[in-house]
Each structure stands twice: as C-alpha cells, then as structure tokens.
Image 1 (tube, rainbow, N blue to C red):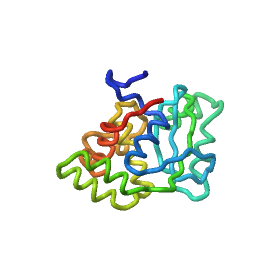
Image 2: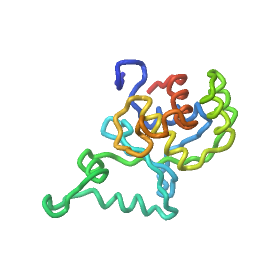
Image 3: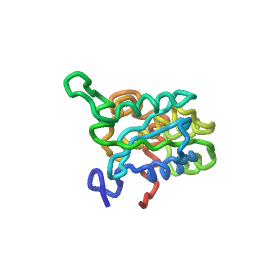
Image 4: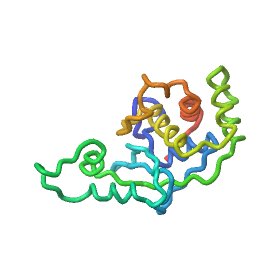
Length: 181
C-alpha cells in the first residue's frame, strides 16, 4: 500500500475521495460531462493532486485548461503555477458529479465523536453542502490524508479551515473510514 506518512491512511485517489465523501453522505460519481460541478487532477499513480469546482455552466474552465497541454516555446510561452503542474507533470482531469446527499449518513458518522466542533459539523451537515463546500471538503480530506496537493486555497493549517465544520467532517471521515483500493 502506498501510504503518505507511514500509517494506514493511503494517499488520496478518486476512489478514496468517493469513499470518504460517502461517509459524510456525499455521493460523488465520476462522469464525462464537462458540466460536472467538480473535478480533480490525478497523477500517473491516480493520486489526487488538485481538487476544484468548475464554476461555469458551459464547461469553459475545462476548455481553458485544455489549452495548457501541448508544446510551447520555452522562452516566450511560459507555464507557471497550476498550468505548469498540469502540463509538466502530465496530470489527468477526472470530472465529478454530485447528485445526492444523505444527511442521516453524515449524522451517523459524526455521532461516533463528541465536542463543540462535532456539534458544529453535525449542524452544518443537516443540509446538503453546495459545490464550494464540496470542493473545500475534498481539499481538507486531501490535507488529512497527508497527500501532497497543488491546492492553495483551503489547504493551509493556518487559515480558518482548521476546526471549521467542513474540516472537522473531513478529519472524522478520514479517521473513521477504511479505504481499500
């Protein structure tokens, strides 16, 4: 098993992300639909390296990112940031659709724990999360599995995400869910 930090938590694959999300009642399905609300980029080992929300209703973000692949003139057409990561590391996009949320599953998973952060997460997950929440959840799961990520927003331990309801749910999902590849 490929582990990120020497314990039983494997680095995050799409299948593992789906399993952790499922523990919180979030049903994520892979799709070919460019209008899917979420996506991730995976490396050649299928490890999730970036999680994002599409933000457009016409697939524009994906079309823009598709232009990042292919040959370029090294001195006049520089690749930086995410563009460099995607193209130089040959990351592949996986589209994720979110159709169903089962609050009772989230409540069942969170009921195994207690404390004010758990109470806040339980209250938060009484209603279906929106796409921005799902993106943040995925990023926080990535953080809590110790998987190296190209995400910057929501990935820090020094920003507000630490201890937020979404972060708490991600911690609980990783701590209580067994992932088998």
